Structure formats: C-alpha cells, structure tokens
Length: 327
Image (cartoon, rainbow, N blue to C red; front, side):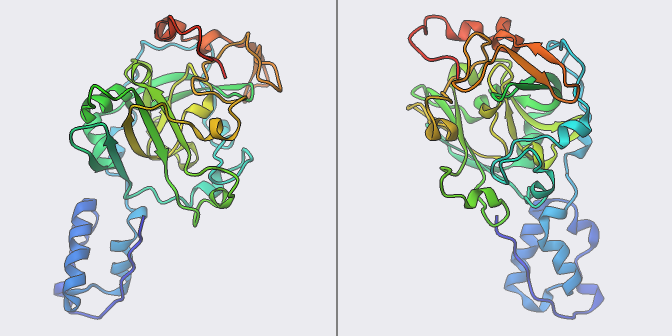
C-alpha cells in the first residue's frame, strides 16, 4: 500500500474540505486527494492533509456489522477461548516466529486494503476489503481451531462463507482450486525480510473444499472487527484442517487449474501437505497428534478426526485413498 503524504499550504478557511467529507468514505478521500494533486492552490493545511492521507487511521466503515448474529448450526464441545488469551497467543510468521506478535502486528496498515480476484474468471476485479465485506454480509460462527503444533482453541469468528465469494467471482469450469495469497510488505513485517521463507504466504483449497458450507472468510472475532494479529482484514477459517491452512491478511484469490503449493509445503513437504486434515491417528513426523492442549486452560483433550467436523466434510475425500490427506 502506498501512503501519500502531501505538503501543506495555508489557504482561506472557506476552501478547506469539510471534516464530515474527510471521514465519510475511502473513495471520497481518494477522489479529493487526486483533485488536490492537480490543484495545489486548493490543498489543505498540513494537519488536515495528514488526516486525509493516513487512511489506515480512519474508522472502520463496517463496524456497525458487529456483533453479528450467531449461526447455531455449528456447536462446540468446549467454552470459547478467552479473548485476552487468544489475542496474545498467535502464529503470524510475517512478523516473527514466536507467539508474541500482537504488538508488532499493529504496524500493519489495513485500510485501504485492495483484494484481487483473478485467474480463471471471466472478469478479474480488484475490490476494497471494506466494500467486499459489506457486499458479502457478516454472520458469527463458533469454531474449534487446531494447530499442527498440537494445541487448540475455540473462537467466535465473524465473517461470510467462502462459497459466497466463489459465487461472486463466477469462476470458469476449468478452475479446480482457489489459491490465496497474503500481503507482502517487509517494511512493516520484519519476518518477510527473512529470505529463507518463500514469501508471500500462499495457501489453497480445492473447489469442493472452498464451496463447502464450513469454509469461512473471517472478518472479525469476539463481536468486533478482526484484530491485526488474527489476520485483519480477511483471513481463512477452515476448522477441519490444521491451522497453517488458515491464511491471514489475504490480498488475492486466484482461481487456478493446477494445485497451488502453500508456503509450509514449499518449505517442508514431508511435514506439511496440501490437504492437512486433522487426524489423531497420523502423527506429525516429530510429535504425536493424538491429543491437544487447550490454550488458556492447560487441559489436554483427545484430538478429534477432522477436528470434530467429519459430518460436514468427510464426503469431500471419498475415493481419495491415494492422496496424503493428513499433514
């Protein structure tokens, strides 16, 4: 994202853009900024120019969508993880490899946030995340989250089914997979300066998985818009898979014919496969997956096949005995 910072000139008060227009919509800001660039005599004072250009600090225009109505189809076998615990225990390798990424993640500018939808579609488009969220609508779902590191949480996500975005994109019949890509901004994400990782983070789903009712694009959590350390403004939630599949801060959805290779699969395919479905009977090469630690409680629970979502997704993998379905 390019942050435009303009010089200031003193002008009569009557020529200053009214504040309610400054904060109304991103499109108004961009249009106003373009006009000012062509007409320096009409430029605002320095203080106001900073408000116009610093779009990242503008209020979320979709904040009124939260808290969203809960979809009761998906029930939990455990309490939702405390928000304070969840907010301080995150994997976000774009920033660092520890769980303590919340402070660094606040540097990520998430507004404006352009989302590309391209590949095997009739009309590739680019749409702002705020506009996409408004178009798709928001509901709340309580999902279990299971990390490949053998720990789990329960999270109240807000967002929309991925299949709604697929319908919006209207992919061609030759599209077999959805490839998702995160942002690339090493100036604010120090982990992306580490050249041994194949940035940007990439993940993918088959079309059958992407259009399954359970696949979800999360835009918020705990009744409010998404915190940056959770992957604002758009992240994937596929609760029957290990957590590394749930790519954060998505900037691109590409409909492709060839199976995409995720970042972790590219790094170590023997440990992190494409399908990555949760299975207690298939250990990670370096540890057991038979149980998991419930973060925030220290309790250990038996791991559930498909993380407990088999009734929704098991049929996706019938006849695929030759595939390595478990990471």
